[in-house]
Length: 441
Image (cartoon, rainbow, N blue to C red; front, side, top):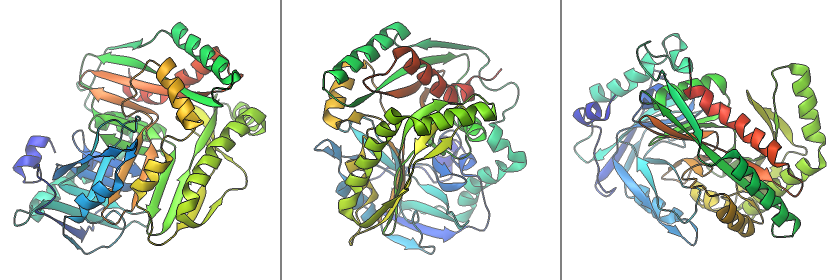
């Protein structure tokens, strides 16, 4: 459904949250959430579970006080929306979705969709409408939104991002925003700064620009990403699309989860070679130390909010189509009253996996050496409901789409003995995740 069609259906509008009402009802059908969102909606989904929104009931400006997100302001905005919720699961009632900038002081906003279709891990489905009192859309209008998702199920076209042969780009031009030589020089300078004791690790990112002859469609890119990376968190928010493997933090009631990643090796497609690379990753002292810094930071940051917090005894390998990562799961129970997921997001971001360590020293080196406006790349992306539940991932393996232009990002963790040429190769491998979803012969 286009924005114009949604407006005609009465599911688009802009209004402060005061005066809005939310209504959540069970949904018998099982629409595809990526298809529900289409090109103009918002979606955050992991293995078919998540939320997809169409239209805009409100946009909530997110105050960034003290270098972080003001979770209380968002909670107040959502609490101002009375809710008639017949389902009662996390993600029901009014929800706000968004992608926050990497820079914790940059302006940010979340969107409260006019219609949200949700799916829980146990298969429960629901639909929520948010509209001014007395102006709620009727079920025929809601069914039109759901029907788009059901159409996306046919033949698993949603996984292939299929479009008619005469649609989509046919010509592409890809160029680095900063020359590889200059970027490698920045990596070398970072290693010198680390050896001089200015930081333990700094994450440096780079970007390439893609120019096409036809507009890039968010739904088509996301469909291709899902086909290649089905276990990732898929997202599309106002032109920012991606498939990230990394869960920053999730809260459901008083349960909290995180799945930080740090340490990367390539994949070749040959099982024996990939197994050897994975074993080397697990055995690398430097990589394990880098990974430990991230896990310790996440653990130590979450622990004050928790009555207990457990973590896996050993890191595991998370294999993607083109790279593999070291990862460790953490899970615990929040103390009462449980912190909002946005409070936890603010405390955690940026982790050493996307910023470096120590945090402030690494951010200073990024500002000095990177020469890149990251925008929403590597920032938190996800959703929060009125109870403070939500799921937020790290916005990597991502791109900013704008008509016939896209910016694709990738970053690497630089330590004292990093080799610039190897780090450049790692960024290229990571970029293939999104470039491969855009550039199709």
